Image (tube, rainbow, N blue to C red; front, side, top):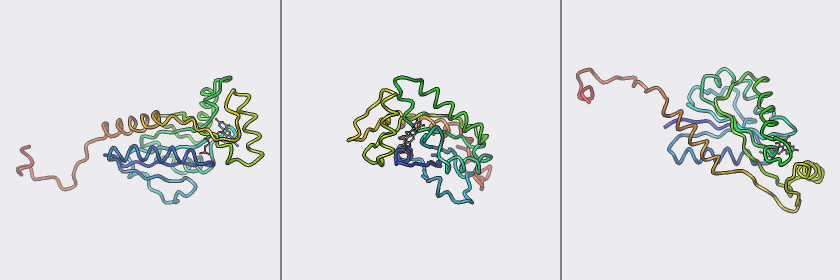
Length: 200
Ligand SMILES: Cc1cc2nc3c(=O)[nH]c(=O)nc-3n(C[C@H](O)[C@H](O)[C@H](O)COP(=O)(O)O)c2cc1C
């Protein structure tokens, strides 16, 4: 059993949904999970009690959300000591025209260069396109971009592209590996050498 933190930022709700999904998958496997909106992270948050940390942000205008970047910057030293997974939520990876995965990896590389944080694992997750929840301008811009990339353009409906089975898989796999590699905890009060436990 591991104690896990899932930190995220989200503008339109999809990354929050992914963060909550990760938490649920891990709780079912009896891990202890805390989910935290990076914008509300307490300044004195101590990461040393977590055995794994997931950090997630959507890509908005070719970059990650400020609260996540700030969170990483202020906890970089601790994050370098703990097994961490970064999940990037976006739409470019779905492009039928460009290599959206390579483009998104360049944004991840920029985050790494900007923060000096090296996540052990990186996952690119397809996000959502909630046209009906956008204001007129964003709906117009998104439709234009998505059309160029060969995507869905019916603005009267919302689209969700997240592969939930893939999210379940990487979350369980990552924490499974971390839990398996954890050093055995030495109890504070060790049993006496000649006690009954010593014979086990
Ligand atoms: C204004 C705006 C800009 C976006 N820019 C990008 C982008 O540069 N690259 C990308 O892959 N996705 C981009 N997206 C798609 C979002 O990453 C996607 O909708 C994601 O699901 C949003 O996550 P959230 O709901 O947690 O904010 C953009 C979406 C919006 C609304």
